[in-house]
Length: 256
Image (cartoon, rainbow, N blue to C red; front, side, top):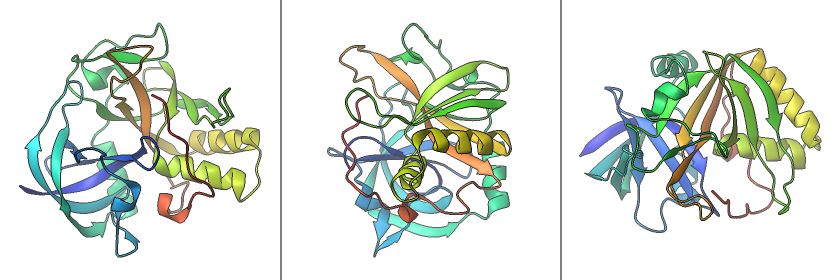
C-alpha cells in the first residue's frame, strides 16, 4: 500500500541503527520497520542524498501492520521503495506540529506514567507510543560523560500543565549537532547546555515524545519515555539535519 508520510522522527537506536516515524495525510502516526537488523543509517540516503529526514515527504510501501502495544504505529515496509517528494516549508512544518499537539505528556499514551525509576509505562498498555507537545519551559539541557565513558543527552522540561520531566534525547540530529558543538567548535559540555537551554526558552519549542522498546534487563516490561524529536521556530538548526553534522567517531551502542 503506497503511502506518503511526513517524517517527524529520526532517532538513534544503537550502533548505526535508527528508527523513523511519520504522519499520514489524515494524521495517523506510522513507524516504518524492517526485519532484523532493522533500518541502518545509510538507508536514509539515496545516491548520496539524505532523503529521509525530518519534514521530508516520502512515499513508502506499507506491507503489513505489526502493532505491539504501546507501539501501535509499527508497519513493515518494502525496503526498495522510498520515494522522496519534497521538503515542507518552515510555515508548513510548524503547522504540522501544531496540529498534532497533546495537552500534556500524560495525555499522549493513554496509560499511567510510572515514576519510581525514571519515567515509563508498562508493556502492553496504552494506545500509542508517539506524540507531540509544546514546552512551557526548559530548565536544563545536560550533556555529560557517564560512568561508562559515554555521553548523555538529556533535557529537563515542563509541559503545558506544568509537569516536569527529565528525559533522554534520541533525536539523531540533536545528538549529532551537540557532538558537533563539542568536537568541532570546541565548546564545553556546560556551555553547550546553557546555549541550548537559552535557545529553547526563547523560541517556540516542540518535542516529540516516544517510548523505548521493553528490552531493559534491569526493568523488564517497561517502556521508557524519551525525546525523539526537538524542533524550534525559528529553527535552531537553520534548516540543517543530521546529514550536515557527520560524526567524528562511531557512536557506541546505546543501552535502553
